[in-house]
Length: 244
Image (cartoon, rainbow, N blue to C red; front, side, top):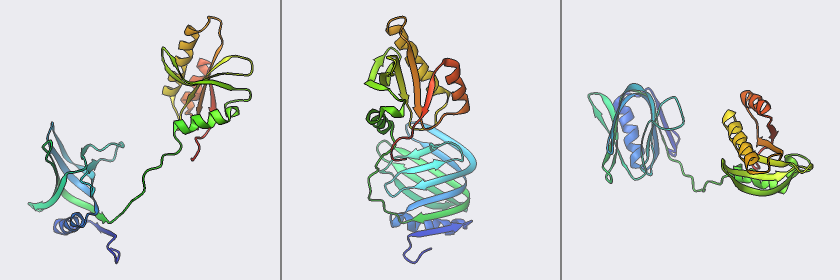
């Protein structure tokens, strides 16, 4: 624990010791986290129950509560901001609760074993500034169309087709129609299928002998995506969104 109590951590604490840390953390508005073997019960708009397992629980000072396993990015249970957190001992187990009044919801996590407990007195006054979005990537291409290829001319953005809106619709230096699909991250087969649907829709919409090219623009593609691009006669250009 630091002198100003900004960070307090415990490894393998006894339940009573973990209780003391969590109580003090909640009292001073700290971000509290616990990892260990626990069960999870939820009652509210529905009901759910999780048997014993290793999970990470986060109690935020705004009242949000999150329960994570070792898989995926989404919590398996959660409570929104505005809930009341509490902690107690029951039969030598640490019990953490989070309650919401409207609607009535109750989350209860019972730790058989606490492997790690921590409380962080953090502040974050800054608003999130998003960079490197698909909109940023689109702006970059419109400002410098040669990033797609020399002679590429954008004619429209969000051009509607029966398969959806095309990110950038244009033509190459030979006058052929070009469909550009933008992705801000590494992409797989799904993005190739999306581009192929746009190309097919435009071929049906335009004159029968119109040559429509499809170009996928992203930082990178998987090997399977690259293989599908070749099979479908589509193309790939590596471009990073600005700010990355």
